[in-house]
Length: 128
Image 1 (cartoon, rainbow, N blue to C red):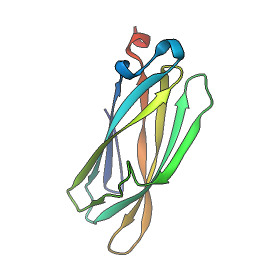
Image 2: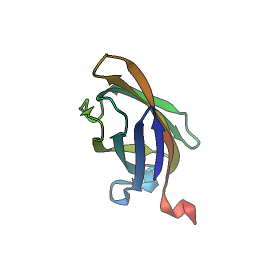
Image 3: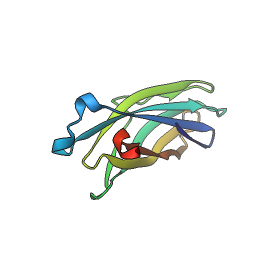
C-alpha cells in the first residue's frame, strides 16, 4: 500500500493483478486498485474531479480526467473516509499511475488539489 497526505486529506492505494480477466497472449493485463480517501482535516470537503497519469512500460503514457470517482462526488466530514475500487488495463504487464483529486472546502468553496501517490502495477511473474 502507498499513502500520501495533502492538506489533511490522506489517500491510500492498494493494487491487485486480476489473472482471470487478463490475457497475456493478447498483451492484456488487468489490475484493480482500491482507493481510500480519509479526511483528517478540520473542514468538510467534497471531491469534484480526478486527473490520472498512466504509464504502461514500453507504451505511450496517457491521461484520464473527469468528474468525481466511479460516478460519485463524495462529501467527507472531518474524520470520515470514502473507499472505492476501479481498474486499469495495461499492455505490458508493468506500469504505474499517479495524479490529483480536485477538492472543495464546503464552508467557503475554496478549491485545492490533493496528491494521489505513485503506485505500481506489476504482474506477479515479472517479479521473479
